[in-house]
Length: 249
Ligand code: BLA
Image (cartoon, rainbow, N blue to C red):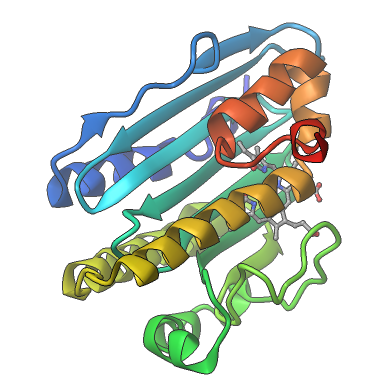
């Protein structure tokens, strides 16, 4: 029995919930029927996937998902989408542990735009924090995604060991979250409808891009079946993506 590994990211989940409740007055955001929770017994060990979703005036969608397949995999994935009248980056988290051998850590302020003024406003403030975690910034190559789209140069992206997850990654997670909420608190809401519409469109484009590139669909399918996984991806994770079949009509 290897209890500690089984709940690798539970402290992260609890911290995320605590700070969200501290900063915001959260409302449940509905998750489509059948997608909030599922259990699979297909793998070597039973796998559960559970998701939570909230909204508040500043943040239109806060979602996080935990996959617990015991020793085989422990995954925490989260995206925070600000309201359309804030042009802040999205907060993206993807922490994956496969057995004892592979721990992949990704966390970023995911920029909606790549122009210099935007990056200077929303990404440059991340540099000081990023510089504190050189061990979690390994310049790994991305295979599924384009590092120049929806990622910043101050992302945390590392392959590391379980001990580092408990210590350094947890510290970095808390620091990045805190800075993100400070930036949101300091942000001036947009008032120009054209600018608000640009943010709306950019967030939709993020969902479209992510739905098409997400390297997780194989993993979801293997545990929870193809049909459920497609629904999960298109109706919950990236609900503003237009499925390719529909787009082609
Ligand atoms: C990689 N993310 C991955 C992989 C999986 C997931 C299975 C491949 C791991 C491997 O190489 O073995 C898993 N993705 C998920 C899960 C969900 C999901 C479980 O969307 C949803 C529940 N991915 C994100 C977010 C970021 C992100 C928000 O969903 C941004 C921080 C990044 N994931 C990210 C990156 C990689 C990755 C950069 C490496 C992929 C590559 O090499 O291109």
